[in-house]
Length: 231
Image (tube, rainbow, N blue to C red; front, side, top):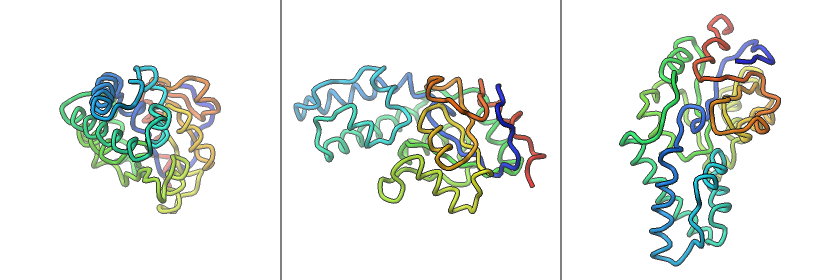
């Protein structure tokens, strides 16, 4: 762990999910490939089935943006249909034991909740995906709220973090955003929150510049955030 700025009074911890709590890397290619091929066999599009690097570059982005990038030739309703099929397949895979959870997530989420912190999910993923990950890990109960990007009232992670701050009457200085991608960093900085960068996730150092703390494992949050910091 490398601490750039020590926390003062933190009341809420906003957790990204994929790349912070969980990695879909070992199931995502098979899922996308299967559903892209099935859709193309039926409809003649999309033109290209993405490979793993293509897909992993999209992790952390809103779903609408992901499918604009991966299948730009599809109409919006076609992108929505394909993404919906992929969502169903991913959820089924996660609930069947697919994907990898990072070490220490149960212990750390329990510690945060028992220490008095409000814990929120702050993911660009859709609710069924987030729910499946948290429930399968046995940590769903530790979260105060699981807001999500609905493309109506919340269109990106910046707005999602702002929603949490307003709804729960939090000052920016009272919230720590934890994540591994540029979208996490930008959401924290645009809302004037502290940012904990996960070096073990999917992001690069270029995406994680200006973080307030760099953690090499999720469990290091227990050292960075101590119960004595609560009012």
